[in-house]
Image 1 (cartoon, rainbow over the protein chains, first blue to last red):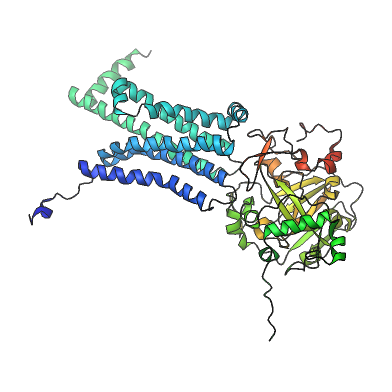
Image 2 (tube, chains in turn orange, yellow; image 1 turned 180 degrees about the horizontal axis):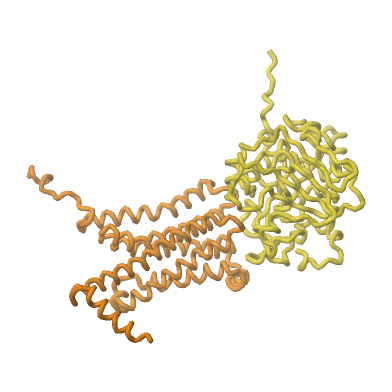
Length: 241
Length: 312
């Protein structure tokens, strides 16, 4: 009736409703497709410069790294803001990381090397930056394959999580891949490396905080911590000659 | 009233590159410029465009290959002082001031001298040299340079018998260039004296029949077509003859990756990528890289007896 609009609860950023999350996911999906769409448009508009294959290779590679870092930012952001719905977007972001990695790989195989198998094998074996980049891509495949709910159930939460923690290593390989291919200007790889270090560093810091909080909780249950600590220190001291 | 044609129209804008390339081919097939001139054919000698004095003669040393479109030659550049993305120089190099400009030629020479850029432009008859350019990053172009042999400049200063090498120093002006320590500025390059005196070695002052655009190394640059592109130093301010091998920017930055000679060689890979093939700008499939970038007949003799794997 006339009061419907007024009765509707104000949007709460901490707790989004299911329809709000669905809308957000749809919008995010389109947004994530934009870099690929712009590349396709640029290709047909002849707007990718003198060396379009190189432009596509660089763009898909950079977007892979960006999506990987965005995916890795979900957990820190969620913990800092308590926007727990962010976790609902993580799978899509992770799959877009794989999507751009796949485009990057296909650009190399099809556009750059044009299926020159011998040259590709030599590259993967002989060129450290390609070895590392190729390994990172291969390691992403099991993560993409096990991204469905059914696979999470089949593996069990703990094993699934252990497998998906390999993404930290993959991200390090990704930054190394970039680092080793530039000729002398390391500005960009350093920036990606710093963001990655911050995201991984956050996890270490957060775990320490949680451990401290846990310890504090334990002391709270066992009585005043000061007394306990003194009681423990005294016997240790008495042992020293 | 007289209608004067504006003098800012470039010949390359008047003549479509395909026609232009065809014309070059005709000239070469017809036994070079003199014959064409005698016939009074069009384009035998270009009219002097604004900024470049005198006529520009075609050269028998030019390749017959199709030149890379001008828009690509002026928008895809490695000129790290103006940024490391290949689109950066075209965006940023307008800040480069090419006048006044002098080039000091000194070191082991009988008559050291500082040349004004306008003297350099008139130092020797200008020629068009259509050369292949092979970048160390495994892409290539065909570029119609305008210039004269470096030998013509060096002869004016009387190199001493003790001179064995030539060092080129390029402009470093931090007020308009990058302050990032990407390379040890100012950029330096070097050649052996016999390489510098080789008839293929060019001092380029123009491109596509007109003044050299800033992003391509204005107002005067080196072009050594059988070596990787980075050897062809841009925007030169000093040329010094020495008896010891000079330090060079990329060799200092990565001695295992960029040798002093850096002759184009499909058999010696860059440690991080293959040099066996190259992508010609505008082409889809890679083509095989040729020893000395296809100039082996002219220059391989310079390296007789050398182990080109060790002295890469």
